[in-house]
Amino acid sequence: HADTAMYHAKDEGRNNCQFYSSTFTHQAEKRLNLENGLRNALLQNQFFLVYQPQMDIATGKFLSVEALIRWQHPAQGFISPLDFIPLAEENGLIIPIGEWALRTACAEAMEWLKKGFNIRVSVNLSPLQFKNPDLVKSVMGILSETGFPPSNLVLEVTESALMDYNAEILNTINTLRSHNIEISLDDFGTGYSSMNYLMHLPINNIKVDKSFVDGMLDDGKSLAIIRSIISLSKNLNFTVTAEGIELLEQANVLKKLGCDYLQGYYFSKPVRSGEVTDFLRKQHPIETVQIPRNTS
Ligand code: C2E
Ligand code: MG
Ligand code: MG
Ligand code: MG
Image 1 (cartoon, helix red, strand yellow):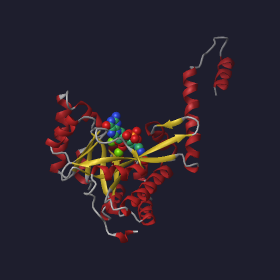
Image 2 (spheres, rainbow, N blue to C red):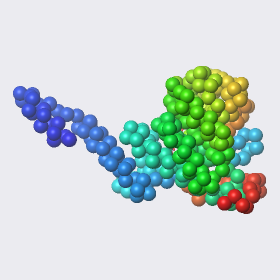
Image 3 (cartoon, rainbow, N blue to C red):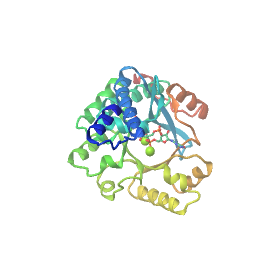
Image 4 (spheres, rainbow, N blue to C red):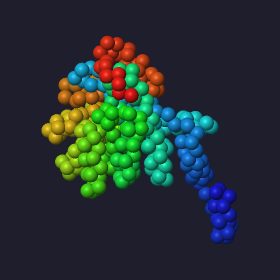
């Protein structure tokens, strides 16, 4: 690409040498490599999931985890979802990648259930997946394939997935809800927060974005926003999760404000599937809820 660019520059220019930013071509090349890599990643099993525990304030127990995707590239090493999810959204690969994440989370969480941990799992869905008319079919197919109970599944969507919602999206949410799948609104307050969809869509949970939690101890505005989101959620009968808790003091203040669930490095970083049960056992050796044996 760099070569072609210089070629055109020479053709057009009368020796007024046009330098194409090498950082631009470098970025473009990196992006192209990433995109090609992304196509192989699924086939070559380069993705895996990690799980971050969410603490239920009422009981002090970790009753749910959020599944977060990881990409271990053979040459480039670890690549953050913040870098490859947007790319996968642009080229449509998010649909198969998202299905892989959902299937893997349900299959791995099913193993925890079989071990006697009655745990729920939250899976992130990109707006593109959420607007896909085949979503319900795909989710229900994965649940029956893995045997994972729908009432233990939470789907996290961001505000942009609900923006300009239409009858089809309302129908998608209603159908998922009729199977007792919960819907959680992720990164709340950072996008197009709208009272309109809060009023009309039967969601269950709101996640206060980490940016407000980051500021809450030294910035009155962040704290005021958190307080308002919690009160709004209570009044609308949604539960509230705060994400990005790094300090005990943040946890204590959020508890006082009536937050329901807490998630963040203070409690645990996201861990590999095998470590989830270790974590649960260590935190609550005798308090885990036993489920009937015949669920598999
Ligand atoms: P998110 O869904 O808002 O996930 C929370 C992010 O905050 C995660 O980053 C998590 O590791 C990080 N985090 C949690 N607690 C703390 C904390 O105390 N301090 C700090 N500094 N960070 C904390 P991660 O895993 O890098 O994921 C970033 C984003 O990528 C996610 O944000 C989500 O939007 C997206 N993502 C991850 N996995 C998937 C997936 O399977 N599908 C889709 N569509 N998106 C995903
Ligand atoms: Mg999330
Ligand atoms: Mg979030
Ligand atoms: Mg986020």
